[in-house]
Every structure is written in C-alpha cells, then in structure tokens.
Image (tube, rainbow, N blue to C red; front, side, top):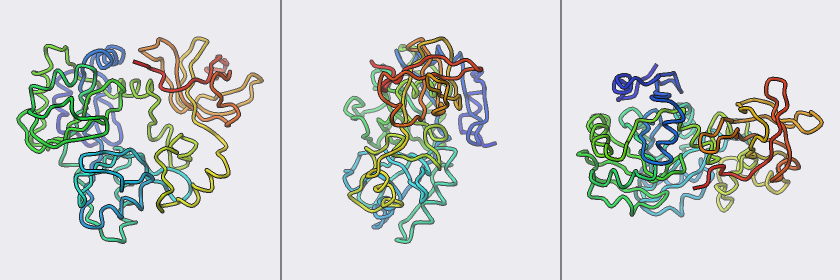
Length: 360
C-alpha cells in the first residue's frame, strides 16, 4: 500500500483511512455531509497526491499528445489546460486526463491514480516520435483547495493574484513559502478554488501554512467521500464508473472533447460511431420516491424491463434527494422521462434530469 507524503498528518487528524487506487487515503474526517457543506459554503482542502503527473517534453511533445488524446492540444497557449481522454483501439476509454501547456516544448498531464501504470505504458507504446516522457508522480503532492472562500483565504500566501487565474488556466510561482508551485484552476467540485502542485519536500510546510491562512474562514480537511458527492452533484464523470475501457466516450457525453480535425488513436471508428448515431446515453436522474441509488443498481422502465445500470449514485447533501447517473437507450434519455431505480427489489420512481444537479 502506497502512502502520500502527508499520510501521517491525516492519521493524526483522525481521518478514516481506506485503500484507494493502491494508496492509503483519507476518506473522511468529521463526516461526509459536514465536509461537503464546508466546500459548498466556505473552503476545504483535499489531499489528492495519489493522482499521477507526467511531463512530456521536447520538439515532438505535441505530436505525441495529439496522437494519444482526443482533444486538439494545438489550440492550447502557454498557461492553459484542457480536459480530454485517451481513447483505446476498441472504442473505450483508457483514462480521462487534463493536459497543461507550459510552453511549446513542455506539457504536463494529470492522470487518475488507478491508471498511472496503464497510462504510462499506453503513452510510451505510442511514442514512436521519441518525445521525452517523464513520470513525476512520486515526486509531487497535490492539494485541491476548494470552495467560494478559497481565493480570499489563500491570497496572503502568494504574490500571484489568484482571482486572475481563469478556469482551466494555471501559473507557476511562489506559494506558502514554496517555490515553483503550479497553481491551477481546474477544480472537480463546482464551487471554485484551485489546485497546487508542490514538491514532496515542501508539502508539509505548505499544508501548515494553508491551514494557518484559512483559519479565519473555517478551513477544514476534506476526504475523498465528499469529493465524490461534490463531483456527482456537478455531473462530472469518474473513471471506473461513467468511463471504462469498454465505455464509448460519445455515449458518455464526451463528444465536446473529441476533435476530428486531427487523427488520433481510433479516431476513424469514433467518427463512424458519431455518424451512425450512439445507441445509449449517459443520463442524470433524480429520485422522486425515497431511496438512495448506488453503483450497479438496475434502471428499469414502467413495465419493469431492465434498460440500464446506475454508474454513480448518492443522497445529495445539497439537494436532500437521491441523485445519480447511468446509461440507458437514447430513446429513454429524454429530459423529464420517467424511469425507475431497482433498490432492494423495489422499483423507485425517478426522472431524467439535465446535469449539473447542483446549481449555484
């Protein structure tokens, strides 16, 4: 079991630690609902150092990125980030990632913790243009400082104007007495804030400075359980749930980051799938009856026929009702359509809704 650099701090704070993607990670401290509300209304800090970080550099860096990712990285300018995915050759998704452009000869990729080795092998397998690929994952820690009070509470820690960093942009500079910190506005909660990428030798100092600076704003450490409820309220995909090696990215609603203006792995087949029309579609739904939808629960129609499966589900702390996502045939994916979630042999009424579930 791997440990993040701040593992001892999480344990000293009384966090409930669980195995996640091969790491010992804090799933909660005070409780999911309290932590969820802290991020929605104030400021909270997630340790997401289990995520992977790759550096791709040299004159052929862009060529490699264009080959293995779905989006068009050629439109990126220095200091901009882009959401995309690695398509595989059988119509599914290797991983969903974020690409950061440092300059013309240097890019960073943030990948999911559970897929670090798989992604690393995939990139290198396709690196026939001999770009320089480095795995920086073990040398960096990542803190996601999230919530409407994040910028205000952290501004004293840096001479960078945090409010100037637009969504999906990043800067590198000093933060909390550490140098060369990447500060990125690419949050996963829908409540604003940013992430900081810090060398492991500096992370404990940064953590302590962050909590000192945020004390007047009620800052709290937040576990992975609340991260999941926050992202689900926004309708954000999670790899292993909405996205898998078998899942069509077009059925998952990722057509907006699938650019056929270039050639990439499996682009011809994905283009044909788009032209033929998808068969299933990822939907959001809200329960009308009482219950909590969970991963892999069956979705059925009014006649009791199974039409799909729940990919993610929870009791929404913000909305006070059961919400979830899942795949159903396109004909059943119409907004407002009545569906049922099979919970312990009971079919609980629900309706298809547009995401995000949570609106500020």
